[in-house]
Image (cartoon, rainbow, N blue to C red; front, side):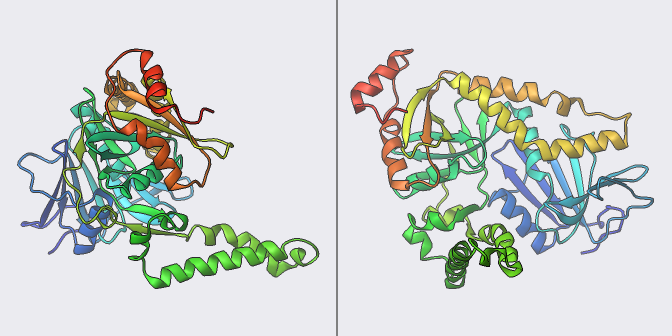
Length: 404
């Protein structure tokens, strides 16, 4: 395999395709095996030959030339006379060329081979599904006893925890992190990227814990031991000593290591199914100070208005690069990106309209068992549309769960 330094591939390039539920096609040109693995980690095992033109082309080169490169920020982005480059991704050096003008049509990403992940690939994918009347929602999704359940909320609200709680009871995995919703509200599609499990999650997932390497479990124990020790010695005169101060300042970084990453098929009994379902029930996860877990009806339009802000928040990293692109090339703009907010809101509003919707209030961390028992009654049957009467029906049928 050979490639030139300016992004043009060899005469007979190697091609690897990913088909995201027929909505977006992604083609890798001249990837190494590690490049294919990196994209698979981002998109899951959705490799499939495309019978149509790809929507996104990711072209890999050995060296990406950047003549007369000028920098934006602390070398986060850069531009030449005719190209815009991402130079940092998640605080790591990278070199990726993206023409933001192309996004919305067939767009090309050119990057040096060997990156651990392709910057902005998911963000661009999430924008392109708008062209197919779908919206990407920050959510998890599963099927429980034949009922499609969509769980959404702000970042770190408990979406993955709800998915894991139902996984213990035989739920079918649809997606986590990003779920694609059709505008008619009839389909939700999962993008099966790996799931991050915190050490306390494993307390409720003994089968999954048994698959975690012994070295990682020992690391968790050591970090907890160090944390307890520094808390004991941080008070009083000893806590003012320089070594203790260094240890205290290092604890946040150590605590961030208290997790493992697993493929969803490892958690869901090696099967992923079709990764598609109808979203019958919508749950909005919310943290609160109370130590109880409770469920109450919600208006899907209220959830729409909340989650559109979540979607825009998650897109901030992408938008920061797009604004840097417009700064570098003030004569250029992308009308599709500029109008994406309105498109997202319209599709999400239609997708959730008329859905049976609830808010789950919980503290953090919480018991998976309690969360499951509180949510389960609302996941067992589809209520007949009856306006506000649904609230009364639920209370009468299940005795109502703890109110806030």
